Length: 474
Image (cartoon, rainbow, N blue to C red; front, side, top):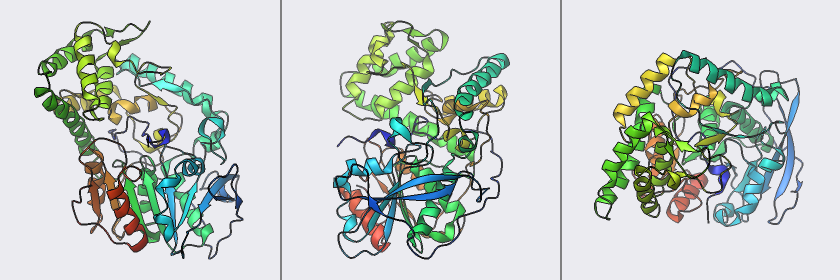
């Protein structure tokens, strides 16, 4: 089964940024409940026996008596005697958990033998575009090209103005919700769901961007975690953010080197040298395509190449052909099929810009990019937040959920991931004694839905708290 689009990490899948964000403000957390207070009824257009209920939560958790949002909660009851519930989120940064679960009934039968399956449609991501049933943010969720690196301070200022203009188109429709869309806000919603269910502790499966919800929850409510699975996510818990950014660039370089190694035995031994010349050439002048008005600079080509390299051997012949063609002056092989925008892009980054530090000066940005290019000469700074968070410069709300180390006292957690993802997850879980990461030495994004070995280990952990052996390969 193809992986659903909401699992995509929208900021190029990878972690970055440089500057420490402001300390998170104190907030009021959900009040304790001791029993299921939700009123369940069949979900809209239900086809798999799923029940839904509404839960009211504060739009701003710092104002618990203020305006309320509606979260739509979904439940698939256990088919056997239930031993508890598992809260599931598919990523996004926001996703319609109910519609996703309806479309993925084959994922959950084994887990449901012992556990109720709970999911929710995340705050802000409602309406037709996201298929979410919770309160939505009235926003035109346009696809925005990842910005070019500013050349001077005037460029940097123009970029901030442009980003602020995009943001204001969203913000003015609902300023309060716009400012409270971080992964920490989703984590507080998770705590409200746990309490409304009457569960003593949380069992959580978070895929892709929802792994950041899990990391935020672990920081906010460490005593309330029973089990937590982080599948195909990246490190929002690094104590040294500059080093984490470097680790991400090194992983990107490894993706391209893996492709180059394949080329040595597959009639494309010329491609590595062609690639290096192409990057040098396109840094000075964009390479044109046959699509009117579309030409690619070095960072664009690096981003597209990384996307293909991560897909493994099935995509590598296409990448080799695209590089050879671009070396002759036609970068059409990199143009995405079926995309309205022909550049590396992202949706309006409402959640991302509150989760990830952003550059405040051209000097810091330039120094970081220069450092990453030395670490990753083939991949450069592409597909790290050093470039992806360029679209957050000038954003009208602050970073409210900056990366921070996990607290002591957490129970052992379980990570999982494919190339690069498992390494990043392992860096997160190294902070939590006894934790384990499931590794898959291959391409893809997240493991639960496509890898039976990983799914069995994850189900066992969620039900019995039994972790697989260290360095488990699936």
